[in-house]
Amino acid sequence: MIIRKISSIGLTKLIFGPVFFFLVFLGLGLVKLSAAETRTVLDSYGRPVTIPKVVTKVAPFIPAFCQVTEMLTRGGGRVVAYPTAGISEYFKKVFPDIVRSNPKPYDSRAVEDVVASGAEVAYGPELALSDTQKEQLRQAGVAVVAANGIATVAELSQSFLIIGNILGETEAQRAREFVAYYQGNVDLAARKTAIVPPNQRVKVLVLYGGAGGYRTINKNDISHHYLSAAGGVNLAADYMLGGQNMGGVIDFETIVSFKPEVIFSAGPTDRLEILKEPALAEVPAVKNGRVYACPKGIFVWYARSAEGAMLPLWFGTKLYPELFQDINMATVVRNYFANFYDYQIPDEELRVVLNIESHDPLGPGQ
Image (cartoon, rainbow, N blue to C red; front, side):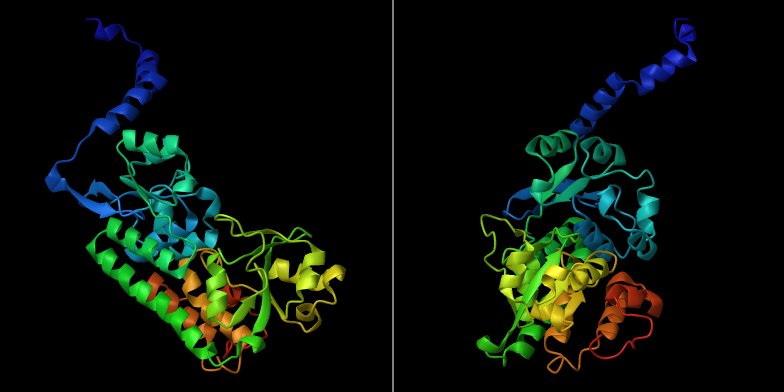
C-alpha cells in the first residue's frame, strides 16, 4: 500500500510542518458553538461579544488583569497565556496554578502563543495588540473582549466587572464584592481627609525610573486619583498632559522647582537614589526624609493593580498619619491576601510588600 511507503520523517514533516499548522490555525476559527453553548458579555464600549457558556481557558493581555483573573477564580488554573515579562516569582508563589496552567509559558502578546494555548477568550486594553493581531485571534476562534478602563477608579471598576462576567456567575459576584471593597477604601480615604483645607494639603510628586531618568504621573494616571482621595496635591497633575498620556520624563530642575513636600517612589531602589541625588538635596521631601517607596505584592500597587485598592489608605498613612492612626497597613495587607488571594501572608513577606525594615514594628501606620 502507498501508506506503507511514507517514512517516519515524512510523516513528521506532514504533521508538524508549517502548512499543517496554518490549516489548523484556520480550522480553529471555523469551529462554531451552538447558541446553547454560548453567552454574551459586553465590552468597555457596550459591544456584545459571544463567548463560550463555560469559560475555562483565558489569556489576559496585561499583567494586572492576569492578577485580577487569579483573584476572581481563586487560583483556578484558567490562565493559559499571560504577558510573561510581567509575572513575578512572588506572583507564582501566591498563585502556583499559573505555572501548571501555562507551563510553556505562552505569552498573551503573541497571537501564535494564544492560539497554541487553547485560550477561548482574550481580554484587556485594546492597545495591547494591533487591530491585525486581534482579528487574527478572532479568525482562530478566540473571542476578544476590550477591557479598556484603566485611568480612573470608575473605569478600572468597570474592567474588573467585565473580567468577572467573562469568567462566570460566581466570579462576577466576586468581582462585585471586590469593587465594593476597592471603592470603599477610596471613599474612606476621602472622608478622612475631607477636613484638610485645600491650602494645607500636602504637595506631592510621584517618581519612578531611577538613574537620573525619572518619570512622573499626571491626572490621567490611576494613582493620581488615589493620591487625591488621600488628600495629596499632585504637583504634576497637568504635566505633559495630552490625549491619554499619563505622564512622562521629568528632569531634576523641574523636580526642584515643584518643591514637593513628599515624594512617592516606585520602589526601594528609586527611593535610595532620590535620597542620595545631590541635585535633589534641597527638595523639601528629601531634606525632611519624606520619600517613601510604594508597596508591591504580586504586582505593583501604583499601576492599575487590584492591590491598588489598598493604596489610598497607604498614601493617607504617609501624608496624614494623625488622621489615619486607626489604619494598620500590616492588618490591611494580611486581610487582603487572606480574603482575595486565599493566602496567609507570613510576616517576612508582608515586610517586603510594605518595604518595612526588619527592625521596624508591624504597627499602626506601617
